[in-house]
Image (tube, rainbow, N blue to C red; front, side):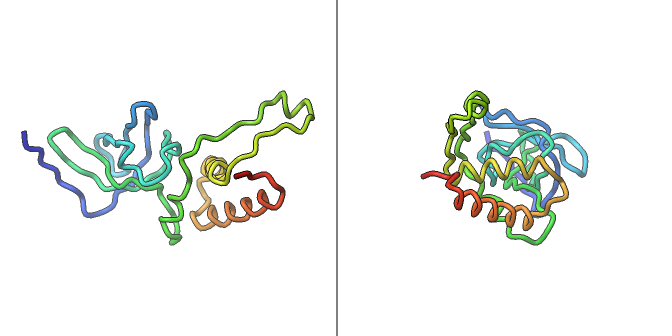
Length: 156
């Protein structure tokens, strides 16, 4: 069976409406309306862990005999900061500090690697404000990373 695919030359915007990390796919609702588009984890150009409902994205739409699909999916950026910089959030799982260790005051804590720390900071920033621009996020991440390094909060 031949599959006919038509790829849009222009970028579209929308929001992730659902994403199943175990199965590696989800759906995007285009801002322009119409049917939700299928998106596969391999078509995400940012850290897969950030793919969750409500996240604004930009993408190219494809039409095929199987329906609409989003490709080249990027986090939506509202300023002129380089998009490559937004893609640098790492794929590492993030360790958590147990409440018992904190309340015990025994000094026990998990030291994060630099990629884990940046993933945590990125997650917090994305959930904090829809008004933050990409350039602002990158500056905050850089300053927090410097602070964490100075205090020994980051390990190898």
